[in-house]
Length: 286
Image: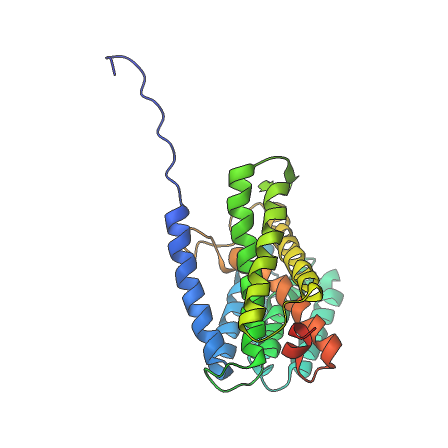
């Protein structure tokens, strides 16, 4: 380069290696807890739910009642962990407190946001524990397969959407909320989700039927909707990431936004078919 000639601007370094490394660590932790089941899994889910609410409160707060933040964290963690014994009571407690916070919105207009955060953080945690059930640690139960199924559907949808969107590009999905997401990525995510979900079903001993493929599409669309909801939420509060806890990914909310919706949908489908008896089989057996 000749003297006086301006230097070419350096291209920003890709964060893909860091994202992949963090994702592998998170997947290993999640997989280990899912296999362990029982108190180990319930404990990790309760901690994760508490972190999600902590990040939500950091965006939506501060609240006039100083104890509201900490009290809500305790409520979510205890309710989620206790759902291993009685999920109905956990959901009832979450609903009751949320209702009170909405009513108290006349005193503090941010309290309804706190109530919404409690539901957003706790309900997916309860759903995950209900799906996993109480099988013995390491035992290949229907609950283990069902939870692995939901995880793979969401991860496959997210990964396929990322790579297809970057490779193909095209019209934006919802540029006002998430400028980088494309229709090609969304459709690629659905294809990846179906492929991954059906593979898990076959490996786990369930029939990879057309109806199950439709269920996977419902979960994948729900996952993408959860991703867009969190993007809209962050735009509303003017933040880029929910936190900086996970290198290359932001916060816990940034990683479980799609999974949260998919877990609730999966548990609802399983409970509707099984009447609350064997939720995992209700989700998987078609």
